[in-house]
Length: 265
Image (cartoon, rainbow, N blue to C red; front, side):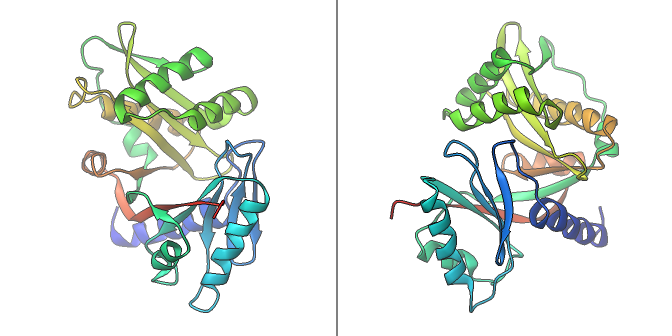
C-alpha cells in the first residue's frame, strides 16, 4: 500500500472499528460517553476505552471518569487502547500519571484480503489444520497459548466458548496439529458489516517456529475472509510478527499501546 492508501485506510479504521465499534460479544455493550467510546462487559470480558477525542483541557477529567465508570460496575481491571495518533500528544503520560501501566506497544498493520488469500503456502511436513468449532478445539488453542506465550488465558477461553455458542459467524479459529499435538493456533474476529477482520492470538510453540506455520495460518484466515467479502485484515503485531507480516504485504498504520488500570485504587 502507498502512503495515501494507508492514510485513507487508517481513517476508515478509526471510523468503523473505533468510533463505530461493535461489541465483541452478546453480553458486552459499546457506547459513546462524552469524548470517549468504550466497551463495558462482565468482569471476565474485555472492558476497554476504544477511542477518544480529547484535548489538554479535558483529558485528565475524562480519564478519571472512565476509572469511576468501571469501578462502579465492579470491573477489577480495564484497558485504555491508545494509538500514536490520538490526542493530546501526551495522553500516554497522563494515563501513567493516573495509575495506568503500559503494556508492550504493538504495530497496527493492515493487508488487502484479496492479495493475502492468493498466497501459495503449503503446510510443513506433518502439519494439518483443524478448525476450532467446539470446547475440545478451544482447549487445544489454550494449550498452544500456554506453550507459545507462557501464560494461561482464561478470558480468551471464555470469550471463544461464548462466541462459538452465541455468535459463531463472528469467529474463525484454527489449530495446526503435528499428529495429535497442537503446535500453533490463531483466530480471526469479524464484526458483521465492517470492512476489517482482526487476526489475533497467532502463536507457535518453541521447536516449531521458523517453519512457515505462522504464514500458513495468515493465508488460511485470509481465504476465509475473502470468501465473506471482507476487504482488509488487521493485526496488532508484536515485534516478532511485524517483519513476517511486512514480507506478506501488510502496511503499517501506526502503533498502539494497551494501558491497563486496576479500579481498586
